Image (cartoon, rainbow, N blue to C red; front, top):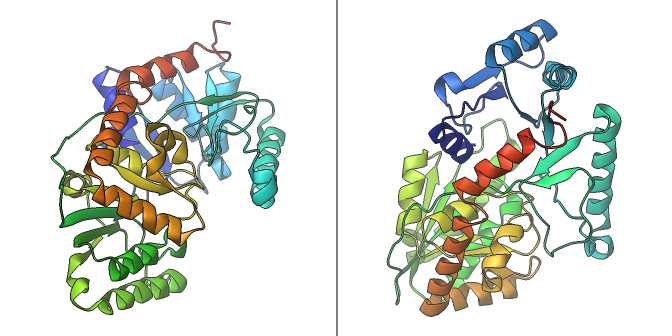
Length: 350
């Protein structure tokens, strides 16, 4: 959201975000953020906003309660409108054999939205899950995350190394414990910065797992001092940590859409991610060495060790990442893709 707003605004475009009861982790763009309560949101209010904003394009993710009025109004007014999804552009054929339930959900959701919205077009920032996949879903367009090159640093050639990860501390599937286990086992000297938002006291399950992670950290003995938990950081502080990192690691088993690795790449930091998620679609093309087998701690440990010890590989991956940011994820490419959506099959001029 931040990058899209920054790039569109810099190009002279108005970019308005309508959010349903904005949460603490969502950015505030001042007058460009409209906060509504979907449970009380009316058609008249939606019509008034559309009349005030005069949009050339609608990209909508949430259709709950009154938010559905945006879609129907824009459709009736012939304003180009696209459903935003985090599902991949391509059908993940390999998942038919190893994750059939996930494929079933993917296909089910596609038809549920088709039944709810009728024939429609969608955009996704995810090209594929895990592997390059099979045929593309009809009416779905790949809209890569925009990201600018922000910082370059001189990586550490020898220990100590600094590793950064982003994870909501209470989410078990983030597998922060894998990273802590690696610290316990490796002879390498490194420090770990864990960026995340603290689970609320009402979320007992995540609070319990968060306590387990911190308790495990204390069992690391002298190495516990090398682990730092950062709760609810703002964008400036997160960027500062990226700028100091030698490697960004996302141990999570499955992240259907994760933008944090791309943010790390923009700061000149190589990354390590799981093979089972949406981030592979933009990380894998920049270097297979940055992907470990999702269900194998041995693969995770060996890839992480290799990246830390091989300075030349990390430098090569940084160059590959910069090349991707200068092409696929460049502001110019993002603006061109937005223009294609405005003038595409839903254009009022066609």
